[in-house]
Image 1: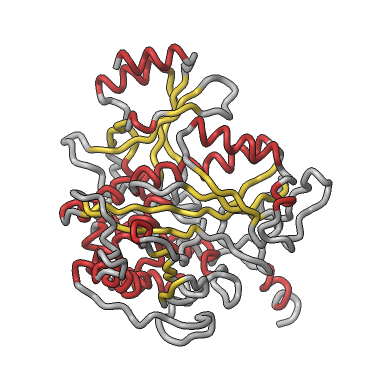
Image 2: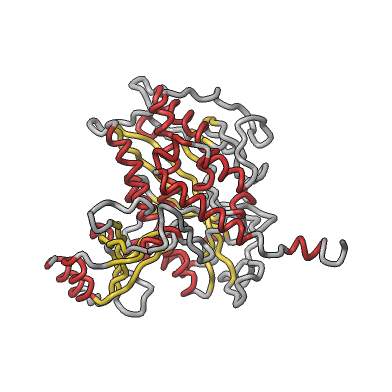
Amino acid sequence: MEELDSWLRSEGIDDIECMVADLAGIARGKAMPRTKFIEGLKKRDMKMPETLFGLTIHGDYALNDYLRETEQDVILLPDLDTICKTPWQSEPTAGVICDCIYENGQAVEFSPRQIMRRVLDLYRNEGWQPIVAPEFEFYLIDRQENVESNPIPPRGRSGQRDTGSSPFSIDSLDEFPAFFDDIYDACEAQGVEIDTLIHEAGPAQYEFNVIHGDPLNVADQSFLFKRIGRQVAIRHNMFCTFMARPYPDTFGSAMHIHQSVQDLETGLNIFASADDTDSELFHAHIAGMQKYLPAAMPFIAPYVNSYRRFGTGLSAPTNTHWSRENRSVGLRVPSGPREARRVENRIAGSDVNPYLAIAASLACGYLGMKEGLSPSPEFKGSAYEARGRALPEHYLEGLHNLRDCKPLAKVLGEAFVATYIQAKEMEYESFGTVLSPWENKYLLLSV
């Protein structure tokens, strides 16, 4: 405690942000002075209402027999391994990610970070250690006063608006050099390990990759990265959006999840055999994803807009086929040596809560390994128009699949899954109360 207080003093930090991720992956919590933070750590009396884990994206609450209207408090336990500077604040500020427990010491089962811990415990009980690496695609859009206005690309250094016609262009990266410099600086300050930056196919669409590692640590970094992107963009008079498909006529934004599994004792990748061939566990992991991802869709395609991203020929697969070095399938196996043997989940969108998307993707693979499943034959050719192994075509179909999937609910927690489904149904009801531009255009004066 003294060492922490000494570090905060030496950095001139007198404000601390204590954060948790809600169901949408949005940072919730409270800010407090350094002295209050240190005192709260000692007394364990930093609290928030449990119902924040039933909060919908439109500000309502999913309350039920599990998450009650009494709004009991939960205790915030800062994970001091995550404490970091918050560089965009005007005064020296630090942020820390918190776990949540009840008064009796029991973990709060609705917390997305706890869902990740729950899945990792299942792996560790088998002597396995998952390794993941996410790739985040996002758009920079012009700052507009009306948030309901259609997005447009910002003007770059050249004074032009990007048309999205130059995927992988180095010159397109140079359009916003100050923004990306600040992104790198903020990531360094917050311990977010990113490597590759590329210009994607959409207008002012970019991709950052988070370096592979332990899923909880990587999810923490992903949670911080999305906040970094939004906050730094505001400082540069832009917005950064991770919405799955902000433009109806161009590419969506994905969060591809690369995942593999190591043996806890040896550190070896169990997805490849000694002769460098695929192991049975690797095939079972893929088979589990094929079987259970259609039920896990509410975690990897969490909004109505998420389904707009799926479409033929737009690098957004509509299936759970698997193949090597084939981006038209939902489950791609990249080439590489034995230690890099992995599967890439290309279905998840960038609009996900990283904790829940990564945990759900790993849960599907875990179930396949435990059940000893076998995958379909490796798919050859373009899978965009292929039949079979189709993903749900509609938001409600994904919710229906999740509700009927008892194995996935057992892994993730039945109370959590029931509450999550309720929150998503409430969001869909809220979505249905708003007239769309299509209705106004074709129905208002015609029917």
